[in-house]
Length: 79
Image 1 (cartoon, rainbow, N blue to C red):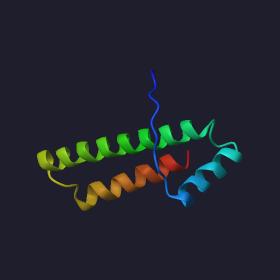
Image 2: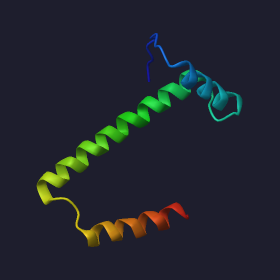
Image 3: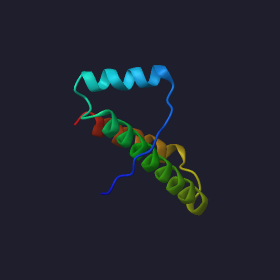
Image 4: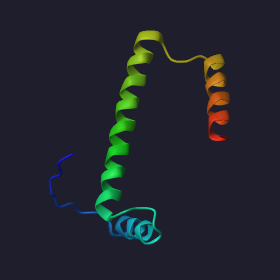
């Protein structure tokens, strides 16, 4: 993947927290950390759009479907 260099402004507190993650070894670099955060947001936004389209086509989930999803997600988190 090719990259492009940009300049961004961050709230000082956010930058310090990101640097703390870097020092703790939870990120390869500040660039990588910011890139991963943006990528995650883009994927979440796309998922939200997809779920909205599903709601339009099929209607929102009922209580039974929500209960099932809660059980599945709880089980998945424990793996």
